[in-house]
Image 1 (cartoon, rainbow, N blue to C red):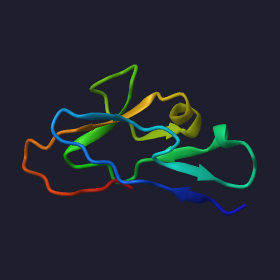
Image 2 (image 1 turned 90 degrees about the vertical axis):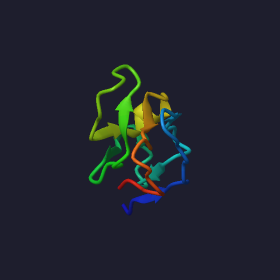
Image 3 (image 1 turned 45 degrees about the vertical axis):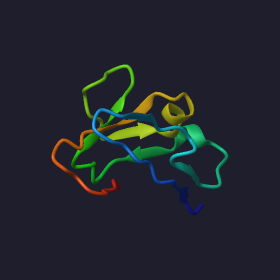
Length: 89
C-alpha cells in the first residue's frame, strides 16, 4: 500500500539530545505491521547525528519503526558551527 509519513519538527541546540519516538516521525503503509517499516537516513543532519541509544556517539543511517516504538533512537545536536535551521531526510 501507500506509505504515509508524518513528522514534527524538533529543535536541538549543541549537546541536546531528543529521543525519536513514533511521534517524530511515524509512518504507516496499510499492512498493520509497523515493526517491519525501516527508516533510512539519506540526508543526515550536518550539525548533529542520529544514533542508537545503546551506542552513543556512533551515527546510524537506518533504524526500524520498532526501534522508535522502543525509544532506542535519538537525535543529537551539535550547533558549535553556528548552524541555522536544518533538516534531515
